Picture 1 (tube, rainbow, N blue to C red):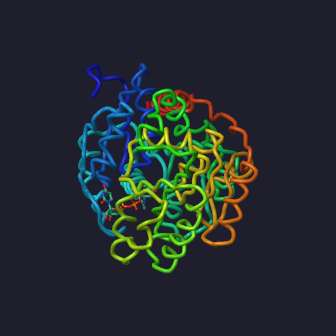
Picture 2 (cartoon, rainbow, N blue to C red; picture 1 turned 30 degrees about the horizontal axis):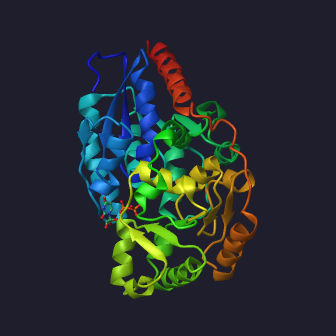
Length: 375
Ligand code: UD1
């Protein structure tokens, strides 16, 4: 925590792995602010060392000032537990604003508690829409944006989505991408791929899979694993496995599918290891949201194993291709990479490493204006 109390306390929330790389540059920028004291709260949605500690250490995120230690549960249990434990924190701390990032359960849970206490809600990475309401994150996105006072966007489509949902334009600010702030800041520090892998042959593909739609349905997971095993005969695949996916593979009896394949299973990796592996990969196959953006920023071909994306700029300007879970589409995208190098892209506007600084300046002005209004 800051030793000198500044004018405004902003309570910054993290809960799950993809939040950590987004909060790191924001905490850094706010620490340099002359008027904002950032306080960091971790809900504890992700708690395994591999899902949490390595990120705090590697990204130099300060230890959370508050840890709600909620852990796993059904969506209702997890969201409700965060809300219950968050409320007394707000009552005691009385921050000028809370800041939430992304689209996880911690994002909506904390935003909902704060808005009902008339505490300003700031949402970083607002306006992204997959159009797929079967995705828990889509619900979290739509609802968080509706109750936010300040909304920071990463791409032009997000602004259009917010306008279409009736969000007043003066609340919305296009600032760029904090995830890419972190990527650019850490690029030189990335762990070289050969240090993460015991041996790097002549190229590899990097695979991640964790979306419920891909790993909770045995038929879909089996189909995906079978095509990936087939592809790995042409290019070895490296697969850091999310805890949820690890459980599903074992519980559904699919370990044997992967045995003797050219897919190497690894535990979840730290940020610098993932960045090193992504940078050197021939291709990345993923169902993650953030990785679609990171590969676009790195210029590495990405095949997204989903039917839709909330990050369309990675398709129109970046290196991303949507292949869904259709075997023929995945094989065709993979062939295109091996034969022609995949889609060449550009780095989108304002993905320049300075999004968090812009965000901090806008929050400062917002809080000053609000304070004047309240006097
Ligand atoms: C959450 C986010 C998702 C994000 C993903 C990144 C929501 C709705 N989803 O999904 O948007 O892409 O994080 O990882 O918030 N588990 C552990 N250890 C942990 C955390 C989870 O073993 O530290 C296991 C538990 O069995 C848990 C399961 O993973 O039930 C799922 O965790 P949960 O936080 O519910 O959602 P994720 O699938 O990780």
